Image 1 (cartoon, rainbow, N blue to C red):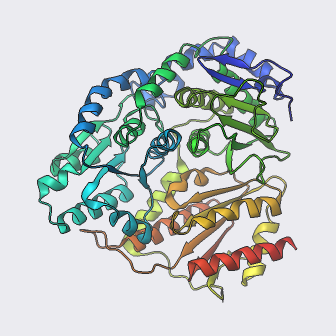
Image 2: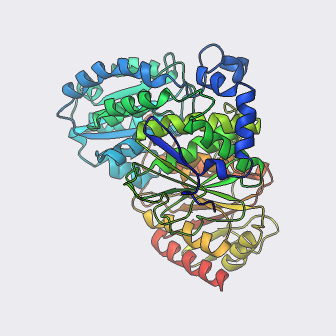
Image 3: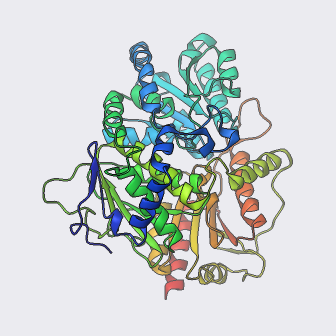
Length: 537
């Protein structure tokens, strides 16, 4: 890896990028981009950059969104005062719209409950938590999502069942959505407060817009400081030199075109909790899988390094004399305030997408998965008997694979070659089944290849994986299902349809998918850890 102290960092607006110029080909690429006038065009968000479908307004990640978001601040302050007695903030949404708010709340130490799951146990637990003091922020982009609609229906019924009238129940909702969206129409019928999302931003992981700011502000976060930090950094965007975001984007693009298409994202311990998850979604969905982001738990966890891995650490301000990385030796380190990070990564991702020739508005895997989910909700997932049952695990092995647990797992893992990676997706409860996430470092240590991990439908960026990906899907028995009010299906059936939709989308692309169904979640996870240990042996 590069010696980050050997070359000066690129610094502006409080954010520093170390090591970018040392990435092979990055300096030459940056010079080429400057020669083409790309930095200024991206900073101006020229509509032609994104194609006719993005004109005139729907452009991903407008770089001046933070300025227009200031118009929200008086309304946010008034709303927070009106809802002061509702101190339990629940953010319900899908498709990455919850990621930024969760990052803000975690970084600033504010309590925010995120409901991005259709697992019946998770939904039931959140519904039972301080209902009388809950305000639900429903976040949705221009598309109607069955997940958000189901959460809305469940909470509305819960408020009514608690003895609230419709007017009082409506007070417990705030909706953030694009003007003219189906969710806005529903909100108007319900009589709830609607805060419009910026119509000029079409990014899949919006940060410094109403999607990120409204829930964080209601949870008590000081969002004005985020906008101030973004404003201070924004002056550097579009420069031909002294532009940290351009340096970062060129490093990402050069690495991906030079054989380092996996990006290990590791926090350096300087206070930006959860930023890696937001960056991972941004990189994956905006590069169409050309970049494979891998969120690594700590600087010493397996998966930080690899022959085709660009290691990028991130964090807040470094103390004088501190070496970036927090204990690992990254190729690139990014340090600065959170508001600057949001803006820098959005711009850098746009640079990388340009280099890779990718349309960031295209999400074929996501569209296919969603279409399959809706079809399976109507007709039910395809009937399938397990190929083998062992203890608390039902094995659904792909064609050509051994049927038993050890054999199927060995077949899947042995098939991850020097160009491949493993994506683990758990359709489980990310709180009650939190130990599932510990499988990622175990598998990364065993495979010595990139291993990603995501929770169910919230792990949307795993759908955009590279063609060489192999997929391990975990599902679990439902202990007491929960109906979706007004719909002919339950949350358990919705979750099963989502899992089946993801499997079908991957199978359609010829990707191997091993599904392990845990008939007892705790016992099944213990069995799986043992099986991984036997494979390593």
